[in-house]
Image (cartoon, rainbow, N blue to C red; front, side, top):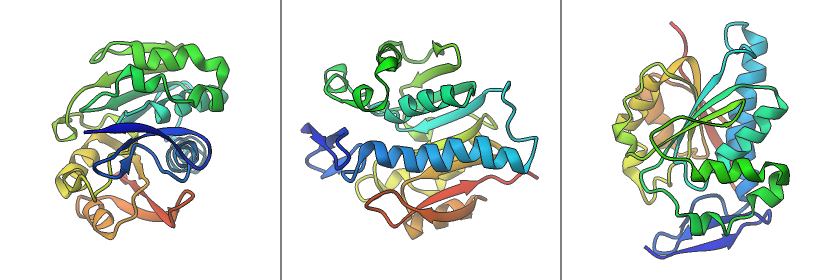
Length: 234
């Protein structure tokens, strides 16, 4: 399918799949969306708000394990790496992607310039390291990229946070089903959370059907709402 690099409303770039009229990130701001959905309501919520509610949730010395559904351009991973350093967090990050983005496209993106020029080497390493093997991108950020379909994820009780950043249900409805969310539910540890930009009623109901407690939250620019789901401990 034909792809092109476009500039979103906050000045950051993303990839557009023209036949689908679908982008890897929001046209209203790629970085703004990622920061709002995955950092603010994902990593920061888990590491601060949940931590203050219960001492069992987060220990600064114990790594937080994150699963990203749709590694894509590496934007969410890069933002997480940079923010994790600020918060002095240890992070184990797994990015699943069925169709890896080519380096020639990655090289046209401007995330380093807009987010942190001092992390240029880390951004390049996110994309240059081999797949299917854990790598220390920085002393506090370990990455494993897995090339597979989401339905083939077999992890159980492994992750604290899931960034669910698949293409939208309009173009790939099979990625937003009860079957997929059951895999996600099983992959999370107790009290783990899943965050996504989608707020569709069918998505929320699919999450609830497999056991998630789901809340609607204010969305990023261009979207009224988003969803955060939690796997409550027994």
